[in-house]
Image (cartoon, rainbow over all chains, first blue to last red; front, side, top):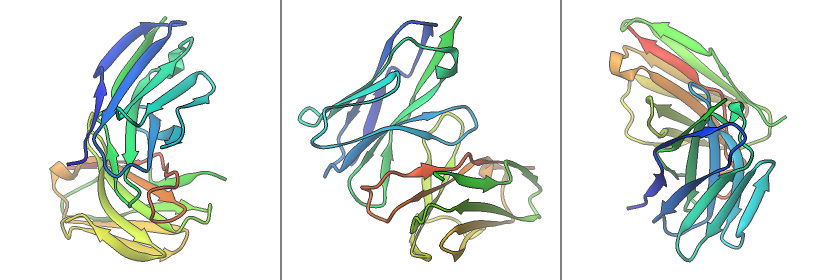
Length: 111
Length: 114
């Protein structure tokens, strides 16, 4: 069964600090892995998308890494801002129409 | 334009009402999707349209009826819903049905069934 597990479930960080979110997956075959940011009650917004051959990809203060051998990915947020408070969802595609979603990590940034 | 636009943003309907959710994209994407998302849960796939034809129905109850009038529009017709159908309904689109291309999501319609 294709599964995507994220950790931690939630975390609280102080403004200006860094944090790292984890994603482990068992999706097979593997096509690509995406990280989305979702504000409460809004649709997910894409942060990064990585294929098998990509190890790291950045989007501003967000940096995603991928280890396709161990089936692990991380999302690092640098110099957090209050606007970073959201749910971060790891999504893995097997190359067909169906995306496998993680349960998300809720990040709260406090002043 | 990389937007998927959903209307309305919020909808409150009674169990005997008939309403429709609308989704529009002008990126030339040929695959469009409806998802249902309950609070603090990941989105669940409901329907997939490819080249304006229904490709996938994830065993969704018939009180939800999708329609794709043209390549830019996707509707979800609602009838005789239950309170447990209250959720955030998300529309998404991608270049094609293959899960290689990036999927763009709309902002969602927050549906409350009373």
